[in-house]
Image 1 (spheres, rainbow, N blue to C red):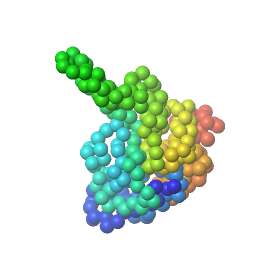
Image 2 (image 1 turned 90 degrees about the vertical axis):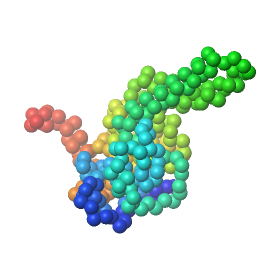
Image 3 (image 1 turned 45 degrees about the vertical axis):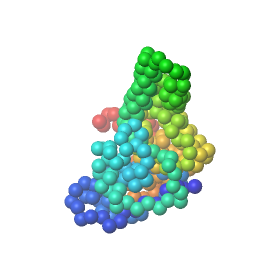
Image 4 (image 1 turned 90 degrees about the horizontal axis):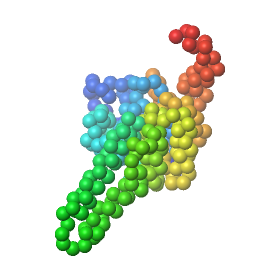
Length: 264
């Protein structure tokens, strides 16, 4: 099921400031989602992340590893644009999230802080408790701490960045919903990218998840059942995988690296 079917902009203000000055925003036609996996591709500055962030604001999904969409200072432009975004949904779900690869470090630190605070609270109770059943007093705190450990691991830093990133996906994509991801390749090696592809396809089939991903990676965008939307010259249009610059340039370079390196 496509939980998010389309997005469009309505009643835009006459403002001469970003993001309303982007050619894409001024003339944006409705974006129709036809598949459970959609890739936004194009050059930096084309508007991919701006649209993705505005969708996150409108759907009010959690921002992984940082403040909420309402509070995150980096999403101020998303809030401005999101107010004029209209979405068509087949179903609403409390599940889903918005994730930028750079936010993952913040997510790790936040989980570690929560575990440390709960551990400190347990220790303080154990050191000062004098009356009654101490096990009863610490039961719920220990259960909360253990739930975090079971879900994310006691020490995410002990894993590689890629391992932790994938573990996050496994733990957080638990049901039907819209999952918005901005450039996941920044946190993953090529091998881990293949693992991510497998995980995405699995979650689409198993829990009816829908993914919208902004990416520059020709590896990720190779998923055959995905639709690729190309952001270029203020327009958005479907494009075949083999027609993307990412595929063509990567293929050409790998076939003739010496030619490119001599011309640099």
